[in-house]
Image: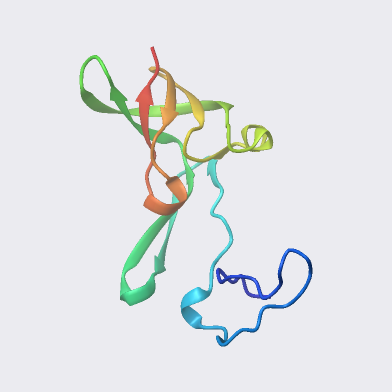
Length: 126
C-alpha cells in the first residue's frame, strides 16, 4: 500500500470526514531513509518539479565543524553514542539529526538531515 501524506478521512472518534478530494500523486510519501554507519552509499531520487534529491544510505565520514577554529574538517565516524530520536536507533547504527557520534577528533552532534540532504554535517562538542 502506498504511503500518503494527506489528512486522514477518519476523525479521532472513528467517524468519517466528507472528502471532496481524491488521492493525488503529489501527496505520495516514502519510507524513512534510515542512514546507517557503513561504507559510503547514496541514492538519487526525482522530486516534485523534476528536481533531484540525494539521500544518504550509508557513510563513514562527517563534515566536522570546530567551534574554536571556525573551520570544517572531514572526520571518520567510529561509532554512535546516542540518538535522541529513538533509543533503538543507536543500537542499529542509524543516524538522524541530533545524533551524538564518536569521531576520530572527538564527540560531535549531527546538525544536518542525512536522509534529506545527502551529507552529514556535525559540530564538535567540547
